[in-house]
Image (tube, rainbow, N blue to C red):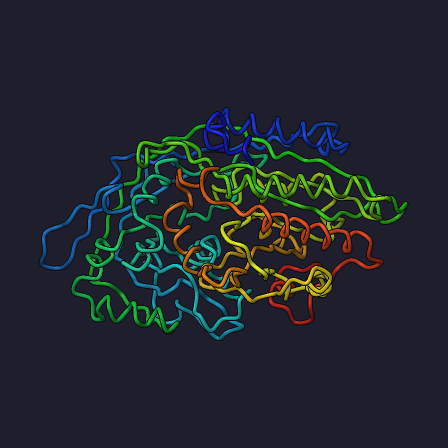
Length: 505
């Protein structure tokens, strides 16, 4: 962690010099541990990207009936990552409030059922209804899922809405700093960017004040709309406003590599199946300074996860006998740009995708307090959950449900691209039952998210409880050992939402 989070690596932004140094470091660690290169004799899976940098002169003009047009400014009123398909895009249309922007037939829920958005701009809130089961909620809360849905309805653009509550959780100035870094999309063989859904190929995000302005003169007040969102019962309707969005951007060709190592299994048959560990190596790099510091070191997010994965790899090499199945260790790039490196690997795997039996993802080992419990996201979706229960019993660790389902962490890290390719996955993090009765874990977590998450304060000077990190790494190791040695590969639970949607038949 100390090396990866050092200022010399400049925050490990994907496609940067600092990231490349980090990638060489991880490859050297793999080699020292005795792993095999995982990409045709190389450690590096080079990923072609298009980086899109937003034009700070981008504007949005809002026109309400009988009122003078109002111009919103990039960075002050809204953010955008630009359009990956064009350097100059004008989106012109009436605006329709579309709730969460979700169509979930299995829940008999559809924000688009009573509104026509063809050729119009949809304005939506993040998240999904709280009464959706966790996995369902996570899937439909994904911005990619919402973009695809809006595009299929013929929408011309998308506006993401923010409230004062959102600003308290994720400060607006942080959103602006990160937006200025732009987006990255991996390129297909024909040169087109993946995970783009024309015509809704770009989004803008309004701050709380601009969101309030958008709803001026609406038949339902913004306060009433926010209340309905909280209840999970929004009623979409056309807003009395026309928007003209002038979005400029600059495109760059960039390459950045996933780093892949393999520990070959011992069973002559099962060695051609793989348990794949993943952890993202990138962070957000250099931004505008915060209290004089411009380097976002990413110590917890995710130098900790890479360090944990390397220690898991070390533990596997020290076993008296190698596991029956092979183990892949994948350090991904561009996670902070939308899980791009993991998505590239899942769609361009170094082994047949059907040979991947499980993904164990390690992201942001929350070592900010000592806990006696863990939160195993995804455990309920497959047989991996049975292994999780056994390992927790062996380690005398409690298992807790997700305390922040509204954050939909299961779609916000690198396990999700694997899930979408039919691979059962698990993402474990520390819980919220503090060993010290004087510690309020939820309060400290919320404070960390507000002050240090994606900010220069996530460095090695912050309080870190390494015993908690070790507990998490050991847990991930033990689960992987069981999965690698089991007679049968894990299966999706019967009638599981993700298994039914993505599992191989």
